[in-house]
Each structure stands twice: as C-alpha cells, then as structure tokens.
Length: 176
Image (cartoon, rainbow, N blue to C red; front, top):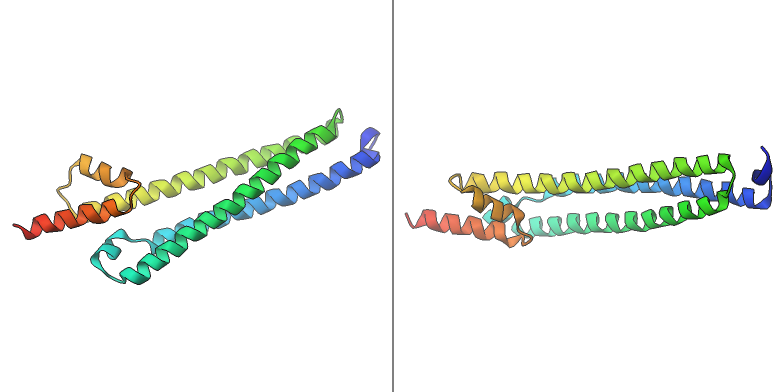
C-alpha cells in the first residue's frame, strides 16, 4: 500500500469505512425486520373479522401494535439510512485522489443504493398486499360490488371506509 493510505488520514478512512459497512449491515437487518413486521401485520389485520365483531377489541389492539412496530422499525431504518448517507459522503471526501479508497467507497455506495431500493420494494409490496386483501374481503361481503366501489374502498386512506362500505351492503341486504 502506498501514498495516503499509510498516513493518519488513511487510518481514519479505513476505520470510517468499517463503521459504514457495519451500519450498512445494520440497515440490511432493519429492512428485513420491516419486511417481517409487515408480514405479521398482514396476518394480524383483518378488517372483515373486526367488522363482524370477532375478537374486535383484541384484533384492534393487535393491529395497532403491528402498525406501531412497522412505524418504529421504519423510523430506525430512516435514522440508519441518514447515517450511512452522511458516512459515505465523508468517505468520498476522505478518499480524495486515492483510487483504492475511492473504489471501496463506490462499493459501499452501491450496497447502500441497493438497500434503499430493497426498502422501497418492501414498502411497495406491503401496500399492494394490503390493497389486494381489502379488495378480496370486500368482494366476499359484496360480490356485486362495482369496480368503482371497490376502487373507493381500496384507495381510501380512512380505515373506516371498509367497515362503512360493508355495513351499507349488509344494511341493504337486510332491507330485501
């Protein structure tokens, strides 16, 4: 090894690179935890069961806990993402003209970008699974639902829309 890598600045670089790689590993673990929490929340959450009153109190508490866990894990991942981003910026400054150091930073940056993409995919897949599940459940209780009705239920940010739509359907059935 020659040049900058042998000096004090080089030692700081390699130490910072090690810390960055450790944070990237932590971020990867956090993303996996978010994925697992999303899967658990899909198992816990059932608008149909909650509407029918089957374990409604327990169900809503479980749903709330699952949602809070996902939010907490996402918050932790966000903090780690910011740390990684700042560390990588610092590493680029420290690497200056040293090609070996720059290559190491590029590798860390590529890993970081991959993790960002993975986290986005996890969130997108989770949103789609929730939407698909609500659509399936709504179609079970209202098989004659129009595409517009289903779209309104699945695109609403208000979790009560599903329950309201189901209760309206059941009320209409009772009136027959």
